[in-house]
Image 1 (cartoon, one colour):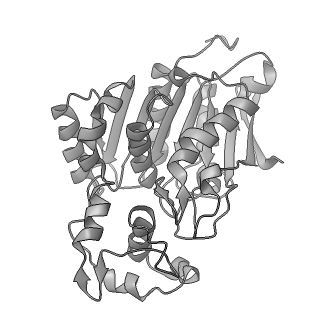
Image 2: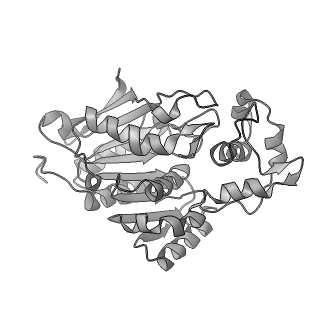
Length: 337
């Protein structure tokens, strides 16, 4: 059953609706962390969706970052970004065309899924590119074709955007990665002792951010179903680096994956990547930009004045929505645009 959230947005005298639903993921069933196979999903329906019952809309799938939730990004909780408010304002002012925006809740017991495929946290890659797209296309008036589907995300979501575009071609046509994390394996493993000290799933939420990130990365990229209770292999064991585990992490880093999947990225209509100049992730984003260029992957890359979160709302308003307005295929929607 879908639940209408307690906020409705007025834009250009039209009513936009934001709903929160549950979507089943077949690849999330039986995950070892015990997370639900029916994660929440927030859906933003633009003003003309209710007004014009015959109109169909492109869809922007949006992926939140590590330790975030769909409720934070989609306006149900105060956060550094409120996507429905931004969409209503920008679309209402004519700064972007109307589209459906969909965000799954990728919060797990490890505080994030990395949008990867793992027996520990489940097949989130398949959920986003498969189960979720099929559900949205079958329950809402979408333009059910790759040209009308976009994928974007911030931080962990930026990583997920690049990963899914690489490994699941033919689903989305345009992607925008905001401050993507995890583009290359970590050069240092500070705090590994803290991660080793976590002995139960319930203790993960109490850990500091860096410890959570190491545990979530292990759950995504070095799962071990035989190693209860966390079912992971850490890159450090008893204070000693584990090269085999680091190799598994490297295999999931877009910089290492690119040569295998460059053709899939070249098949996309448009790719954009950005990062703030004060963001610690910017250096690796620059390296990835150069690597994409060297492999003939057409894309745009921009550095803006900001850190990891302080201008994300501005980027969504001023860049992301316009990017998808230009690059997705729209059908005449009777909105006067």
